[in-house]
Image (cartoon, rainbow, N blue to C red; front, side):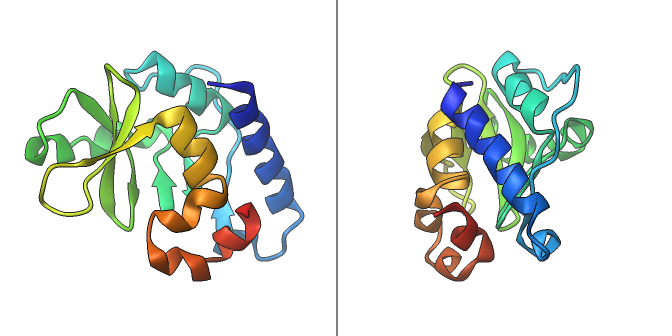
Amino acid sequence: MNDRLRQRIESLREKLRSEPAAPLIGDVPEGIARPNSGSAFWDEFLAISDGGRYGSVDLFANRNLSANQFWLEQFPLNAIVVGQILYRPLFLDLKSNHLLFAADESEPIDLGHADVVLETQFLGSGYEQLDSSFKEDEWWDLVR
């Protein structure tokens, strides 16, 4: 996990703490001491933020990861399910550390390396590129 991403997570957490409407916008929880996601890379993220709700992007807390692996039955990948976007699964490829999004029943879309996607799309100005409806999302107002 790069330092810019770590700083971005901490900055957004602080912004939300001072935002009265924070529960409606998102949630950037504190990290946990010993995550065990099955990916050393993802464990670094969970140590900084144990999942969270980033607008319409939900990243599962460490304790909820195992309950959400059922998506792998439909999409047999060398991956773990780390979250969802608009209730569709978000995978972390265990070899490349790329995030893959299954927007529909077809092959998941490779969004890119998780560090970059987290920093620029989930927590940054690229958020609205995930779905055109996100331009009206309060999370978009917070991250741009």
